[in-house]
Length: 352
Length: 169
Image 1 (cartoon, each protein chain N blue to C red):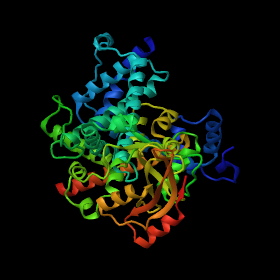
Image 2: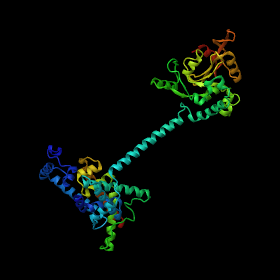
Image 3: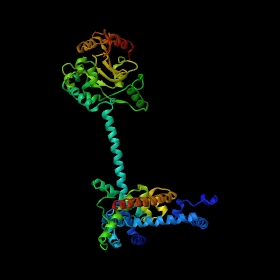
Image 4: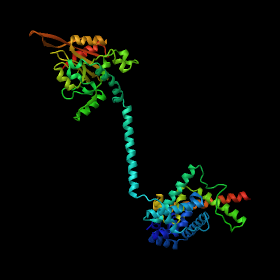
């Protein structure tokens, strides 16, 4: 029973008389309304008014007809028109939609990846790096006739011998503080070998005086003439460096190793090693360990400021006649820090 | 297909009128009505009557958008409406007919979009559930909307007729 009829002589609302006249109510609702209408003159008047309104609306709308007589064309004509249309199967339409959707997703992902590659400042600018690596590799190839005699293993080009540097993952546990370093550590935690491009230019530029680094000198020009590392220097991975250096690889705790260069020593001597590390602020710190003469000459040639030379375990080389010759070795730390800071770093550096 | 053919014969005129009251172009309304039934033949909908009016409403909407894109305004009440030609009427009757036509179109344009849609669908012969399904209204709200639309249409028409009489006198 509708709400209006449960209370004593409540009238039928207009909103129910409209569907009643439109025959949109159920049979029971119609019976209910008709029962009420039989007793209520007011609602009968309302019904008649609404019926007139309804008829008038129909008449008004009836004037808005395009033609007096609308004759449909034969149904067969429509069927023929349909048969002339190329019919695309539904599965093809769905496949096309799915393909478009997938292409859109791929485009979005590709765009995002490309944008990240271009805009992310923490990623290595690979093309620039490759461009700058090439002149160095060429320089080694052109100027390496003596290399096979002194160090057969170094006859490879730098690009072939050590295209990348592996970080010390197991024995060295540098404290990673910068976001980038932490990101690298997270990757390492997944037991994936962390390979980063060998920062040849960074190593080279670390020993290049500052004014020239920021000037208009091109990378190749910077390497020519005053290249800090000749063809005898070879970039190696950390593991290889540990093997070759014996106990002579400098390492500063808490810094990320970004590259290692080795230069073979004379017979019986350990190689001279150069380890580049990055401090938490991103500054490149380079530790050089080797025979005192070698290290001194290198620092003098480059004119960079460095820490005081710190003694490291010497080499004992067998001399002709059965005697033994002692070769003093030292460690120097260079970088764009004050000498005091470099001295502190030199004191905390360990030899591995 | 036989059901659709029967529906075509019984509802073609209603679809044409429905479209005409939305786009105000008799020839285009007939073209679109035929397009509606061709699509119905291709799709074979389960509820063909509601389906054809839903498609007709969509086509009319697309037509209106295309007209806007073509920078043609949808003429609802203009000085140059296109009422049906009535060759059997006298000149006076034709003037009176055109005037009345303009008043009805003006009254229809005075309704809200929702009220106009419900009213035209009802006039086309759709049931309350079909109107509700097409407009998104609850079935119970269709009666309320129709009541309001009918009242506003007649009020708007009476107002225009009064203004026209006042202008004549």
